[in-house]
Length: 109
Image 1 (spheres, rainbow, N blue to C red):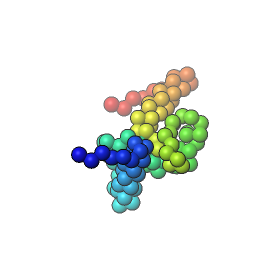
Image 2 (cartoon, rainbow, N blue to C red):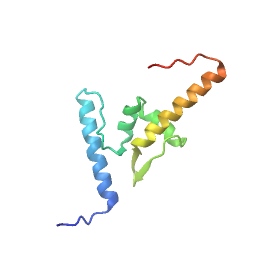
Image 3 (cartoon, helix red, strand yellow):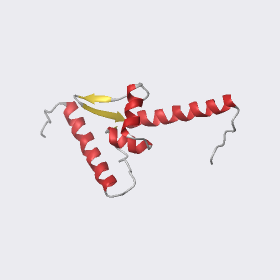
Image 4 (tube, one colour):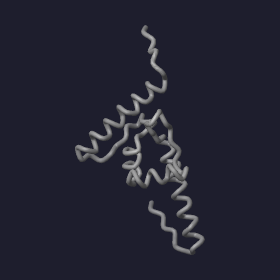
């Protein structure tokens, strides 16, 4: 059995880049962006596409600390779980804001 002597960070960065390349190719082919279920870290482009925002808007959220990132040198990756958590928090804040304003809260089943 051969032992991989590369840095764990390098191995993880290579895996994240391979997933990102696959997502970009699918997106360029016009397919809906379907992230692999095993994807843990996403590029900014893939994360922005997944939540329906521009990369610039995602950069603002990152700069504000709303979405945490993982850095590998200059490469920036976003945890899939961090996006889900951000979406849940944003939804909860919107519902609370509507309740404070007295706006009706409609839930879709």
